[in-house]
Length: 262
Length: 64
Ligand SMILES: [Zn+2]
Image 1 (cartoon, each protein chain N blue to C red):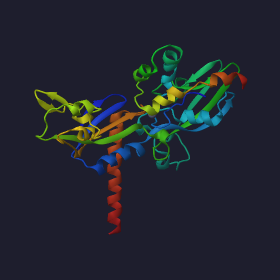
Image 2: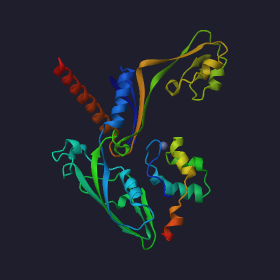
Image 3: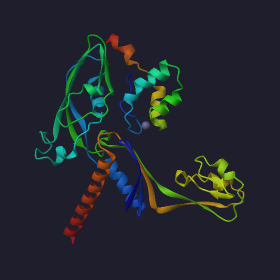
Image 4: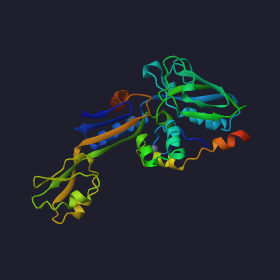
């Protein structure tokens, strides 16, 4: 399996997965969604909340705020020496306090060392005069398998590499150029070309419209266009590295188990 | 009540875009379609949350 990075920023990534197959591409997608750990608020202790939002809503909103950290600084609670009871190796405290008239933002969260709130202006609650919020929260590592707040990727998906085959019957009538919603085709020097080949979503509208029946749409089953966004808790590079590491580890465990059986 | 932190469907963090959207499209007179494009909300799942949201917390807060 080889990758060719197309586009990468702090949030969006697009790459081409080569020499792969459907199973491998999907294994990668599922691992990125459900197995890559990230940090999120899990338990909230509310000392004072006279805002209009219930404690539960407040806790839910806090849980959904992305938190940035180095993955090796914390352990997953189930892998920690404390057996998931919560210690400094698997847990960190974050506090929030404020009174009206004010809006509390994610930048008002008081975090420990090494933990950053990447998106600073998420409104948590709006307070009017006389209202107050004081709370303390515990953040833990977790995976998307348990709750989507720990899922570092958003809209993680892939599509097979589309191929438009144009036969000799093509008479450059231009019907396909008109009808294609993704502008895949173009007529250049009396020849039908596909400058936007990868944009094709295989709707086959061109196949239907073509009076000469000159177009067939197929796909290259060894190539996949893979895209995902992050919630900024990890960089795309970290997510991919962690994801491939997880797949390797799981396969090794599987192999070990098989060997024990025989 | 208050803008959801993330898109209910895809999980993208959207809450931090709300204030700008409100200023430019709801209170100002810019075209909401263009503002949403500017804010990087490409998918229709995220866009419908902005289109249909009303900040009720401002009306309710004083009576609590
Ligand atoms: Zn969405």
